[in-house]
Length: 266
Ligand SMILES: [Fe+2]
Ligand SMILES: [Fe+2]
Image (cartoon, rainbow, N blue to C red; front, side):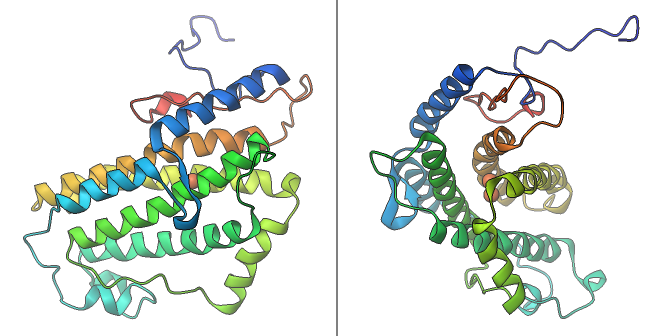
């Protein structure tokens, strides 16, 4: 190490910190307890979670609606599934919403395929499989929060349109690929998702400067999603085999923070 450079001590361990098999199992147990405490029990038939549903109901029963109509009426609906116009001609609010839809649409197709390939939780379900199923319920809950974001801008006719034939096939294939091959791209995908959300958080003030109430609501909805997505990164990291020499099975999952994500955790 270069003289004078001290390691950062922030009180949280990196997701690349080595761990023994026992520590790893204990971390998964602790994470499971945190998840159920934070988001509630699984509602299998609704692909939902009890506490997440309550949060959604709270948002819906205290709705915030944009005062300024989107400029260029119809611009969103004309472009949200397939971009018809030159994006340079669209205003930033419409661009933001069309981007959010396109991002979420891929996610919806991906989680729908993964849900179909996974099984209900039973007594004999392993901890890893339970967490995987739970994460899918969180992801479906995020889709409902996405809808509430669109409704905030009085866009209430959004449908999750299936992707094209080949793209749809690719997403159906993913859950059947062996874990050893899928773990690294799955980790990168979760990391990319969180990075996108952080970027969106950073541009909200500029894009929605004339709509402070709507901006604050969109940010609240975003944080509700990001708080779940941070541990998704840690869980996916735990599946990734390290290329560095180390003791066997010495990965660790991220220890979630009760008050939300922070950069030092990733
Ligand atoms: Fe997600
Ligand atoms: Fe995720």
